[in-house]
Length: 256
Image (cartoon, rainbow, N blue to C red; front, side, top):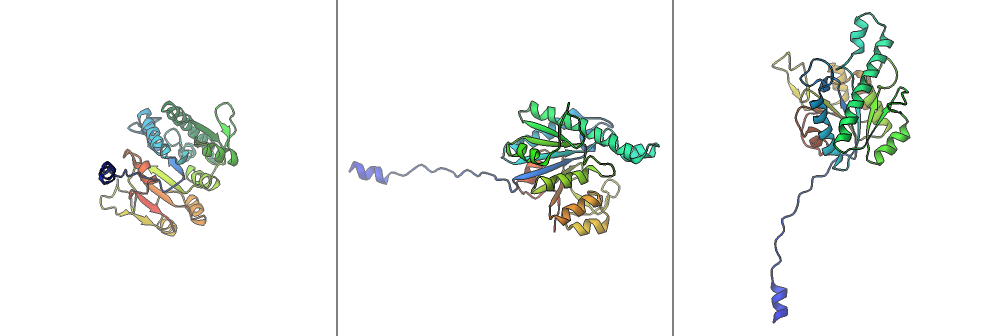
C-alpha cells in the first residue's frame, strides 16, 4: 500500500554537527605592552593589534563576555623611568598613561572589526574613557561589549598584572588569560636557557616559591586567595585565545 511505502522509506542520514562550546562564560585577557610591540622595538605594531582584535572577535562570537587589561611597557616602563632619575610614583603614573594609549588603540581596532567596546579608566579622563565603576563594567559585559580596563589600578606601586587580578575578581571572571610572547611557563628563561623545562600545570604556591616571573607576587597571591585560575599562553599563535576559552590543552595553567 502507498501508506506502507511511505512508512518504510528510509530517512536521509544527517551527520551530527559538532558545536564547540566555551568552558568559560566571562574571561579577562591580560595583554602585555611588550606583546603590542610586534616586530618593533618601540611603540604599537598595528598588525599585532589587528591580530589581537581578530582573536578577541572569535571569542566574542562564541558568546563569551570579555574584559581586557593592557600593559604599557611598549611605550614606557615605570622601572626604567626610576632608573633615569624620576621618583617611583611619577614613573608609575606615566606608565598608567601609556596603558591608556594602548587601550585606545585596541578599542579603535576592535570597533573596526565590528565589536562594540568601552574603555574604563582608573584615572579620571572623561574625554577619552569612562571612569571605572564596577557595576558599570559588569553591565557593559552583560550587553556583550568588550570592556578594556586602562590605567592599571590607578595607584602607583602596583603593576598591570595586579590590576588584571583585581579587575578579574571585581567582575567575577572565570579565569585570567595571560597572553604573552612565550608559549607557557618554564622553570627558567627559554630565551637564555635552551634546556629550560616547560611546566604544564602549577599551583600558586609553586609559582611563588620558585620565583617564576609569570605575574608579580601580589597578583598571584590575589588569585590564590580567590581560587582564580590563570592560563599562560602565546599570543603569537593565531586562535590561541579561542582555544583557551574552549578548554583546549594549550600553554600552562596555574590553579589550586
